[in-house]
Image: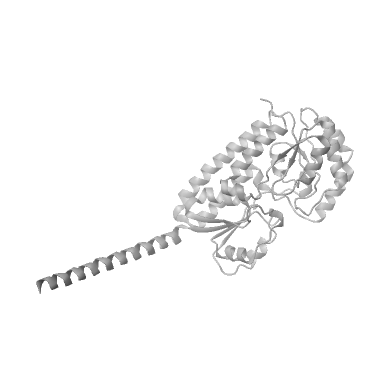
Length: 348
C-alpha cells in the first residue's frame, strides 16, 4: 500500500512539474513575441539609399523593407498590391519625393485611417530642374577646360531648345541622395520619424544617426579633397545622368547624351555624335555608364573613342549579388570615388 501511495505521489509531483514547465515555456514564448512586437518597428522604403540609411539608424529595433526587388531599375518601378498592403501596415513609409515616386502621393492619400508616418525625404531641399544640371561649364584652371567650353558653345542654341522641351514635360531632378551632404539631411529626417514612432529609444536612434552622419561627412570630405587633385573635372556619362547634385556640390562638369532620367528618354544620334566629338577633342580617356541597364550608348562611345568604360553607380538599387554580399551605400560611393580618380586622372 505504501508503495502504491508513493507511486501516486510521484506521479502527481511529475504532473505538477511538467505543467509548471509548460506554463513557463508558454509564458516565455508569449513574452518574447510581445517584446518583439513592441521593439520591432516596420519601415517600408522605396529606394536602396533610404533602406540602407534606415537599417543603419534603427538596427535591430526595426524591420526594414525595400520595395524594389534586387536588380530592378528604379524609374520604371510600379508598386504591386502586396507592396501597397505593406505600406499600409507599416509604421513608417519613406520615399524620395513626388518626382522620383509619382505613385507614392496617391497611395498616401488612399492609405486610410492608419498610424503610418509618411516621410518625403526631398522636403526642405531645393530641387533642380531636370534641364538645369546638364552640360554646365565652370571656370577651372584644368587642362582642356577652355577647349571644352568653346566646343560646347557651338551647340548652345540647340541644347537650350532640347532642355526647354524637356522642361515642358515637367519634373525636377530627384537624385538628392548622391550628394553626401543632402544624404545627411535625409538621415536626420529618418531619425525624427523613428523618434515619433518610438520615443522610448530616442537616444539610441539619435546616436546611431550622428555616427552615420560622421561617415557621410568623411565621404564628403574625401570627394572634396580628391577633386582638388584631378587633372580633369568633366565627367563623360553614357547613361541617364543622375549626378546633377553631386556635380554641383563639387564644382564638376559633365556631359550626357540623354536629356532625362528615365529609361524611356533615349538620346538622339546627333547627341551621341556630339559627345564622341567632344571626347576626341578633349582627349577624355573614360566613359562612365550606369548600373542595372544595358550600357549600349556607353559601349558605342567607347568603341568610337577608345575610352575605357567605368561604372558610376547611381545607388538607386542594387543587384541580387550585391545584396547578398551586404553592399552598403557607403561602399557604392567609395567605389565611385575610386573610379572617378581613375577616369579624371587623380594626381598623387
